Image 1: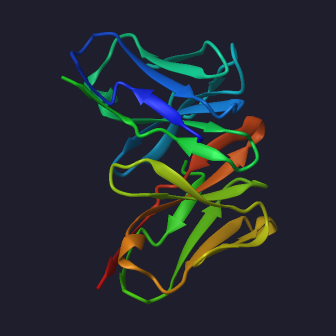
Image 2: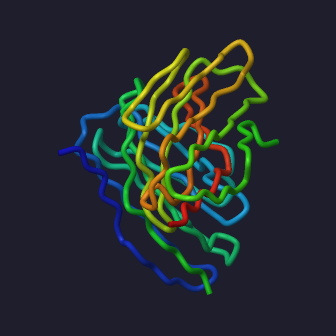
Amino acid sequence: EAAVTQSPRNKVTVTGGNVTLSCRQTNSHNYMYWYRQDTGHGLRLIHYSYGAGNLQIGDVPDGYKATRTTQEDFFLLLELASPSQTSLYFCASSDGQGKVFFGKGTRLTVV
Amino acid sequence: EQQVQQSPASLVLQEAENAELQCSFSIFTNQVQWFYQRPGGRLVSLLYNPSGTKQSGRLTSTTVIKERRSSLHISSSQITDSGTYLCAKYSAGNKLTFGIGTRVLVRP
């Protein structure tokens, strides 16, 4: 069964803290994505990747790093978290031909 | 700039009514996909429609690439159709960009 698993599901951190969000897919997809979702802005692309070691810049990359360590694993790093990064984060995988699967999301609160 | 525009922003339907959701693109794309999301829930792909007309159950998508637009028709709406419908486009490198969505509420 196609799956994208995100962890943690909820996270609270302090301003200036380090946060790593994890995403694993078992779909053998080449493409993986990180989005943030905020009221009034919809889903905005942070970073994406087309394979292990590859990273592409999305539309709202400032303050975020990402790393694709394997075909399956894609990480989003916030090295100096700020309250403006409080959001619902989604990871997705795609085969590039219409098969797209999303994770359940990670709710991050920066206080 | 919002590259994917969706209209209307929200829609209220009586159960069994039909609805048409619109999506337009400021920049050319040759791949369009529609998704569905319950509040705070994960997104689920509904239809991948690069061009022409595609149907899945009560959903029909029509994409006219040269006019940079796509529509999603919901027929015989049900209460469980309530949620947000998002349109997305692909660009170079399989970059997937979303619109803000249309919120649909179906009332009994």
